[in-house]
Length: 83
Image (cartoon, rainbow, N blue to C red):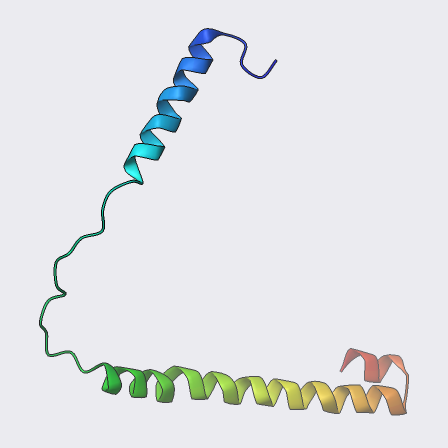
């Protein structure tokens, strides 16, 4: 049997009760702080510094994979396989 003693059953009951009670709180109704944070500028910077370079690196990797696949399909040797 899963619960071999009443002690295990009691511990399980307490843990489940604590978990259920801790998740039943009402959401806070406080307003977010009024800050001067420019989200548009942050997203623009993130796009230019992270997203676009990552996309360009992915495109180069895809192009290299396509070139290698085409070379291997044309000449199926170990040399073209290792490239």
